[in-house]
Length: 116
Image 1 (tube, rainbow, N blue to C red):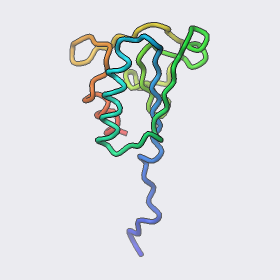
Image 2 (cartoon, one colour):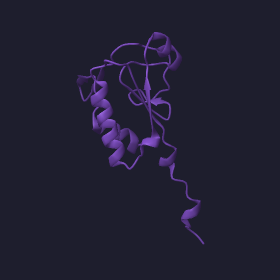
Image 3 (cartoon, rainbow, N blue to C red):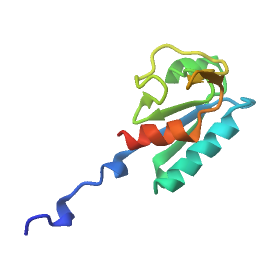
């Protein structure tokens, strides 16, 4: 039968989101809250989310940490759309809509997930 749904693949089931941060980051909690709210709105479960605390420079090197907070979607940085190279063990500052911020807005997270 044409159009039978049993053979369709839900691409959203393959989404893996990694939230990278270090303890004490002033923007990690706000960004993680935004991420969780967007995930809830888009019906993504906690199974799609991996929390990675980066405790030191050695760990930052191992995971190519770009700074706190960082969101990777299927291994690509939400800000650069690239697989991270190198590392930075520092607070991360973003530029969205002409304004600097350390917290990734919900609208940006939602837009990236919608464009997958």
